[in-house]
Image 1 (cartoon, each protein chain N blue to C red):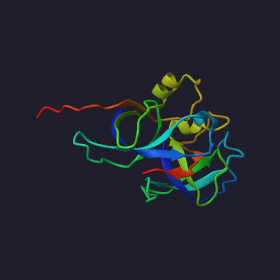
Image 2: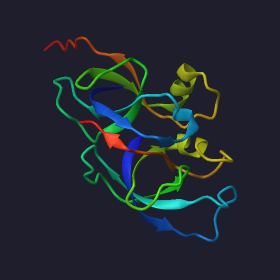
Image 3: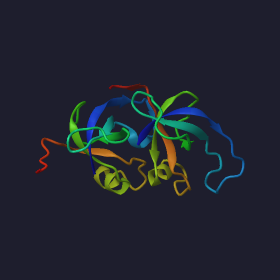
Image 4: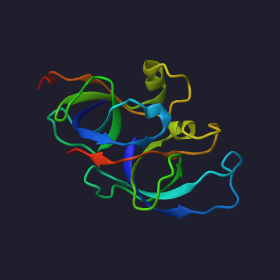
Length: 87
Length: 91
């Protein structure tokens, strides 16, 4: 899992089956000091996150397991909204 | 598994139900000398680790599902599974 900051919303009318009704957000992965790490990515949102929120995500196959239905072509999912990081 | 240093805990009130009651830690991968390697990431804590501890982190989903025994649909990919007391690297 990794931290990220929500930068925006992705709208896609035509999607693979299983992704209907799923919210897709644009996320910048960050480190514990909220410094950008790597490139922007699109992630499925499972927790009703909003723009500017610090969130944590799960990647790879486990991202699909966060979705309902879970057998979907997804490799990044937001699974929590972070209230605080102790460093 | 990877050797990491625990940076500290994170708090999240709103989260996927699979994370209920689990402690989340930011961990930083390190090399044999304790030097940072690559980017930090987030792991659940299965070893009562604290900030500054050197730990072993499992980063593979199937192994996590086996230790958690919460069924097959658990969106968790990394867990602290041990606290390192010493590392011996013969020269």
